[in-house]
Image (cartoon, rainbow, N blue to C red; front, side, top):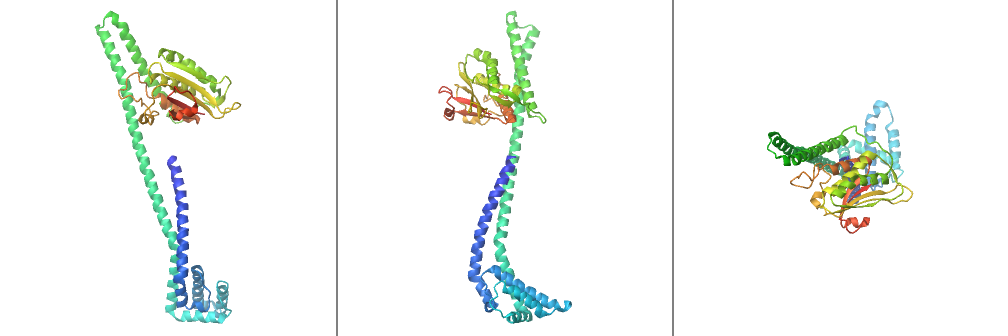
Length: 403
């Protein structure tokens, strides 16, 4: 869709640009023709004795009428029409477009002289064609250049689209590779621990530790599979969110309460800044609550222990739910520019070793996808750009949801 908009914008802008250039060139060409070429042609054809011709357009009109008069006079015997009457009619037309005398007989004589001299007719036709070419050439040239520019732009967009397809294919293969990695590592651990327990080589005092490790790795695999299924479901054709009127303040407050145990276990702090009044919006409460929870979980997992997290809800209007923004900020280290460009891509954790505690890499892509389906916007803002939100000097980065 963006490519189509870009192409339409290019076509319109280039069309008006070419039209402006062609108009200027046409004016210059017509001026030079009227000033230098036309006077010589008029004098050569003896038109200056009868007609006041100051523009190439008028020359084309008069030449065309004269040629029509010659053709009609040639075939008049077939229709039994008087040559003098048809000449009078055509001469009257000429009189309206530059005829400088009332001597119609003189015009008729000139037309008959041209008719009797084939070379004059050929010369007149050639000059008529030349004048037409002079007027048309700027438009034809502009049309050709315009077509070449549009064709070039279409090829460029097609190459970009093909590159996007290749990049998407590469990301898909990388995602599959990451899925396999995220499942294979805990599965290998589970198999090794289970085999050791089955073979009886684990001391009794270590069996509980091995069982807990198996449960932890199994839970990790379940998390990966569940998140993957959710991501595929959201991206599948026909899936629709179910919007309803909800109090966004109460929903965010419930998400903070749900995540409080994890925050406390990680040794982190949370600062909740949510208005006491209700702010009602149209949203899918179940799906959107996952966005808030994922952002809080992301702040817990990808920051050192003791980080400070702030969750805030703000509305520009006290009476309506206009310009509502939700902030999830933390005091952890900023994200590098390279990582920022990929954090909303599936299975991107920013951890080359892909350690088991680094997350699935699907939380932020899921959150971004859910926001897109609602028509909301999710973005990452870091220092110093986030100073405009006045969240506190201790916070280094913030995820902003604009409703």
